[in-house]
Amino acid sequence: MNIANVLQTLNIMAATFGLKLSLTKTTLQNKGAGDLPCTFSLDRVSVEGVEEFTYLSSRQSVTGCCCPDMEKIIGLAISMIRYNTIEEQWTVVVSRLIYAASAWIGFTTRTDIQHIDAFLRRCKRGGYCSPDLSDLVQLVEEGDDRLFRKIINNSSHVLHGLLPCPTTAKQQYNLRRRPQDRQMPDHTGHLADKNFLIRILFKDSY
Image (tube, rainbow, N blue to C red; front, side, top):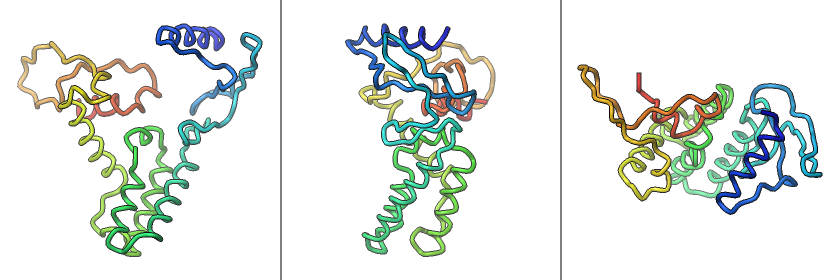
């Protein structure tokens, strides 16, 4: 299926929800793999292939690297240090760094994570963070676990409807207990694996 057919299919799917795909605001990008998509015309509207664009205030790069966003997050954390008391500083630094991390951590590279971990180490040396503060990955994993428990236990949670159905398989083996009772979704590609729910459902599943 070519790009034009994909966009037309998306437009049809959107119409079932009373929505319409805006081609004038549509750009094409190969996220982390492949050549830059060629610009083409669809319904007399030019759809451009780009190396990066901004989505929900987040810069999406063809390399898959989040360095620009990491620098922005660190900059915001530094600005919070300047305008808070010593007692408040370590709390606001951590809260700023991991804000909405469940959504973006899957798109980071090892370099991105090392960038923030290096900043946390500098904060510890400067007394802006607790010396016992965990690294970024552990902080995010703890937040992921808390969020997932809320989603599982609250049927009114906005993300609860996105969970797979509970599994009906009978467990006849004396194995360790699974962390959750949901059916395991299919692996549809590397981008899907970066999704929060996909990551958390497969966590500790093996």
